[in-house]
Structures are given as C-alpha cells and as structure tokens.
Length: 170
Image (tube, rainbow, N blue to C red):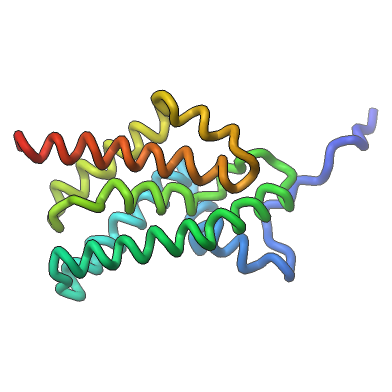
C-alpha cells in the first residue's frame, strides 16, 4: 500500500531557506544526537561563559550581550522555526533548537559568570523545558514558530526565577 497523503519529510534546508535552517538548528547543533536540545543549551552556556571570561565582560556588559542575543534569537528564531517546521512537514521538529538557546540565555540573565551558576541554570532550564509546568505546555499551542519558541521562553523564565531564589541561599 502506498501512502501518498503524507508529505515527504525534509530535514535539510532548500536553497531559499538555508538561512532559516541555519538559525533554527543553531548552526547545526540541532542535528547532534542524542538530545539536540541539550546540546543547544550547552552551546548557549558555553557562549555565555566565553563572552564573560574571554571577552572579560563586566556583569552589565554580559547582561547587555545576553539581552542582545535573546532579542536576536527571538526576532530571527521565530520565523526560522516557522519555515523549518513548514518545510520539514513536522510539528515542532526536534532539530529546531533556537528556542532552547533563547530559553537558556533567559535562564542565565541574573547568573554570576562562574561554572557553578552556569551549571545550575543549565540543569534548571532543561528540567523546566522537559517537564513543562503550567502554563508552559499551553504555549506550545501558539501557531508555528511562536509555539515552538515561547514554551522555551517560559521555561527559561521559570529557571531564571528558581535560580535567582537559590542564589539567596547558595
């Protein structure tokens, strides 16, 4: 039996949408296995650490860099995720990880630039991204790239809140 109703699955970019797949996969991190979301979150933490330590950014400079990164991830990530979803024929495809990058950077917004706080933000973000407490899961219902990205933005906000509370006692 031939199932001609199912559209072909396309994980690789076409020529006209290569930019969208580059951004949606965070320059290929979305193709890493297993757990592409975790790889993308780890890459986001490493970029944060690199900006803090190698560029010797002040806390205010690091906050500004994160804010710019989050803004760019959202402005370009939402349309890129929409295109990647449409062209792959899959709802919220696992290789789209720009949402994890944005969410992870949100989780790091108030973190001091050291490995312990980076690790706490990483673990908390991944936990909230996987568990999806209310209303995070409901945000997945938003259309296309909005739903793909904004559930991770909410998970990042949860992680930011919990990490900030933990810093009071840790």
